[in-house]
Length: 247
Image (cartoon, rainbow, N blue to C red):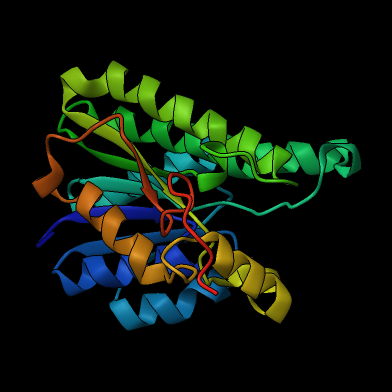
């Protein structure tokens, strides 16, 4: 990671900010993009990072951010799209506006990130990491909209990995279970909801941002240079294991 240059879209969130700290600690340079400059400022000051204000669902804004970071750093080694949302509603109660927003925040932002990043990375190679969810692999009640959006992200990951492999551009996705972040606070701050969620994860706990950030940083690092087109579950076993009750 030393002397590397990375752009984190949605860098002000729990996982994105953790990734930024890990890259910075390893000697890399980080630019973080978000809609709220004030929310980014503490992280930017802490890491001496570059802040970029913009909407992750706006293709022009993302393209401008990628170019800005490449010019600023003299290179662009990796891009992470952490922009996302959580909508827990059954399909019949989900409004058209809620569905459209879920698709935009999660899938459109990922497509915009890939489209802009490969414009630079086709000449130099690099790593793109997108965010999925364990709910794509298994059926979880009330996850219809978010599972649909993230399912699109997984398809995008594989297709883009195939398209740009010849250019040395790697595209992978990480699929977490429930992680304690500001985005999931409504769930994790509710004792009953947290207890139920914890019980669903075979390792007996929900995730911490560091759990997911470590996997992301590995995918961004050249040490994973033979890994592309992969969906890596970082979910405490949620999507693949069924275990006995811990009671």
